[in-house]
Image 1 (cartoon, rainbow, N blue to C red):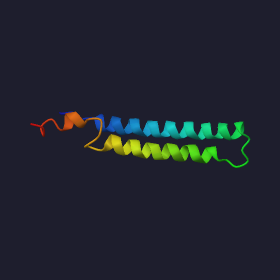
Image 2: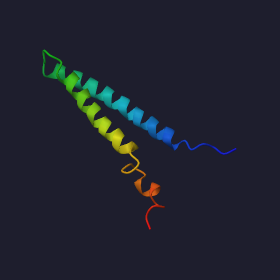
Image 3: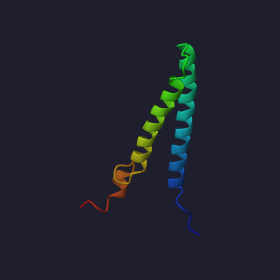
Image 4: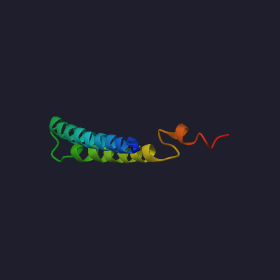
Length: 81
């Protein structure tokens, strides 16, 4: 019985792990910066995860796009002559 290709699953699992780790790091880093600068309003705890979210959305779009993704050369070998 042929086995299914598990590479797409591993790719998306890796992206999800990066996303969770990035948000956790940004939240804890923002909280630490707010305490370090004695901020009355929690500015860093809001701004850092927002910036990480925007950056991760751009990264996910680039990684999952078929034309500009990581496997750009291997997908289009039959197209180039």
